[in-house]
Image (tube, rainbow over all chains, first blue to last red; front, side, top):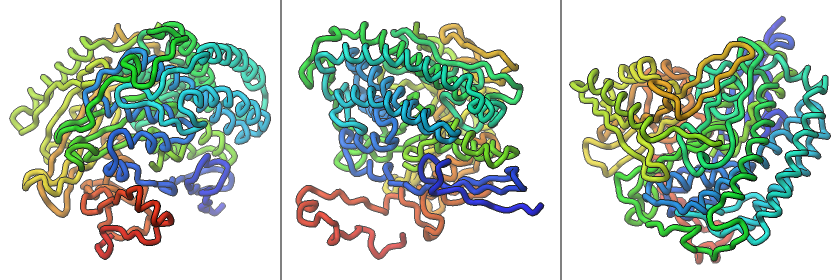
Length: 379
Length: 217
């Protein structure tokens, strides 16, 4: 049979955003693929060269609209490396809690979007219901529902509000039960298993070589995690362990392993939040004024030429990194160059190539299992 | 309980890598040092200055002898006022990750504090400085790390660094029909900061003009 190219996207439910997957098919079998990105390139790296270090945070929020808090934190750690700031421990705990709430919200968004890919609309409604709990919590911190502009160079904007801790604990405990509901619905569902098992194999070493990171690596059986390998924040002080799967095939992790590892990661985030809120220095029910030394350290506003800042961060989709060169406009008030490493930018071309050999109907299952987000991909 | 790679582990691993690089390439103008981040845990990393002509050989050593199996990011920077010797620089960030293929139904659960030798995760920063020129170029390492492929594409697209030997180079973030020679992160393309009054007087932006109007874009 003759082979032909089919264009999926930029508007296609499989894309989870705006990009184009060009697929060469032979009947129902995928024989070649090609990814086209850049539809929502906003030039954040260029814009940052005309902003000072505080003004960049809201742009980093908008890098990934599903996971704003982790991206803003990721930038802030690089800025702190550049400006040589030590952060108060209470602020680190608050950042950890906010980042893990965001991870729960982001994974729920992923699961909610993955359900309809596979054919389960129920999942979408359930996940949106639970995600709202964590968006409400983050809204209490940052003031808005999706883009929080919450971390500051040297700490956080505001302390946790009075009563936040109780609401957090109640919601996280409720959600721990909800995870079991999800598993009851999905783990033994024939449709779910048929679509996910034995599809989209990816080997650990291949993925590392290609630059894939985060949950996708842990699904292939190694507990490599930036949170312990390149430590930041207080992850060494709270109770958790990196989620890791046991892949069933020599061909590596399949879609089902990647689904399982994210479910386990949500459990670990819950465990981490419940432990961190009890251990927070200064007490969970105190509320320090904005700018108090407990939550915000004084930070310089200018960085000299030649200074560099770098951050490792375990974002919800993998390892994000920022690299900043100081000494830009305004006698060092702006960065000279800010470079962003997005995990999905590297992952999407790799995933496109792993689809070769599978059927056209498997494409949404494979693509969705890697959790693409185009906001961070195109920057 | 949480765990983390300790400073001593990373310090030992970084020192070993620096010694290994310097022993092999010390005479070739390559300079390796152990540097430290200044936030949080002050973690050490390896910084290597390399001239462009030795980069591929160095990359092979890093990949196959020192275990830097992950090319995480490539950053190009334009220094129009950097003098004759430094018109551009390219920074490769590489990581060492203790990740191997697993047998079916098994997994590897590392305990951070017990890792040693080449299993300790480590960060490498390779700086390649290029002289003032209109056609900056460095050799491509696409064949050594698959992950370098799209990173190099992006760096060419946005900054205009040519990667010699890179196959299938094309625009990735800019439109595919962008004019040849347009690389927006070069410093001759200015970004304008719109101040408050300007936003107020001309909220729609009809009166604004880009500062590089009339030049090649």
